[in-house]
Length: 146
Ligand SMILES: [Cu+2]
Image 1 (cartoon, protein in one colour):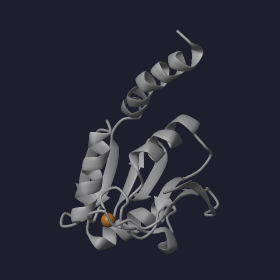
Image 2: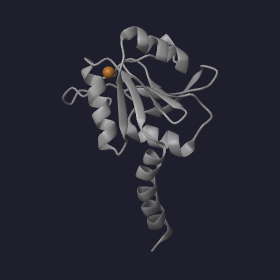
Image 3: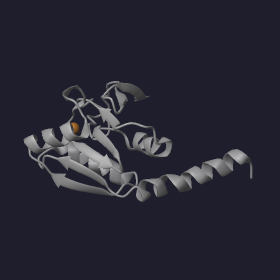
């Protein structure tokens, strides 16, 4: 077998294991938030185990504040996996990359609710959006562009 194929096979094997080893993704959301539910399904389809907790708006605000997510980064739901916080409609593939690269950071955020991000599908409409890496000092840098 050539080396590239071996590498691909290794990664295929390692990715779901990585997601599972991290334990469940804990998600806090309003019970009536439909796009939050659609995002949870997107994670489950991609091999993540998800534990969902219902939260009131004031609980969500508090959870975001404690996690270091400022108002400018906020979206509809907040999640944690391992030591990382995941804010908003972050694609599963970016969470997997976060877990394999393990940057020294708070986590990832997709502020607002961009149309076409996972859980925000509206037919074939999409708008470009960035997944931001949120640093421990509150600054951000672009982690991925979609
Ligand atoms: Cu949403």
